[in-house]
Amino acid sequence: MKIIGIGNALVDVLTQLEDDRLLEELGLPRGSMQLVDAERSAKIQEKSKNLKKTMASGGSAANTIHGLAKLGTETAFIGCVGKDETGRFFEEDLKNSGIKPVLFYSDSPSGIANGMISPDGERTFGTFLGAALDLSPEMLSQSHFEGYDILHVEGYLVQNHELLETILKLAKAAGLKISLDLASYNVVEDNLEFLQEMVKNYVDIVFANEEESKAFTGKEPEEALDAIADLADIAVVKIGSKGSMVKQGETVTRIVPIKAKAVDTTGAGDLYASGFLYGLANDLGFEKAGAIGSLLSGTVVEVLGAKFGEEKWTEIREKVKAL
Image (cartoon, rainbow, N blue to C red; front, side, top):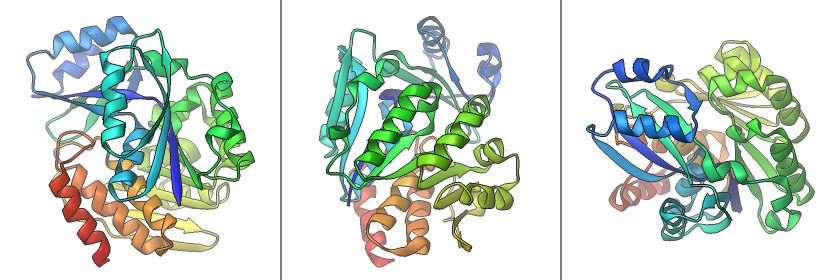
């Protein structure tokens, strides 16, 4: 199967915090994803300039597509970047990872996700969307989705209702299955009614962590799984160190997590989706798909950022073959 992703094209600037005092100073709730303007983004970078940082292409859906490409899936990514060095960095990273770029270009500066990693691995984002916000319904047509089997879309696009609904309608018209990864709990809460309507009308596969599933349904994980499965064909609820659950129809599959020492949880959910969709696309069944998702998410939390090196990917591909 061929899988295409769409989302905010961002470059992650990840900073390791010594403690959480900087989050309080910047007014960023720990564990949340807050949208910031260019001025506040610059302030975050200035206040954290002396701390250890890494830079990598990012954005939720782009991270998932990157993981799928590394597993050997034919992939593409749709997004919007600026005509600047950050945008060129993003595009080159897609190409170097074997992902087909379907990028639009804006006069706005490229988006940057300022990710701050607490000592216990929790991540908090102050995200400047920049050019990513300029992706508009008018840019897209059904032809962008034709030739693919699955569309993976990030829930952060829900902040532009017209854009998200247009994407889902075009992908459905092109015959794709649609996979949606719910956004940060605060984004879900702010767009709840519309998001529930979109899932019910268009979405086949929903990924949510414990906080997101509670924001979406008002329920604890097991009941939330049932509620999401009433709206979509396949519901996936991730409960951190307790593993994950998958429900289709009346069948619930429980996935055991792998043991991992969390350094940074950035990308854990995105890479879980990579593994699960890879398993689904290759007809491996929910248990194996979930196991591959757990393998990828358990591996990525042990490094800073949502990417890891080729040596680790070689090891992962061997483990996947052995499942």
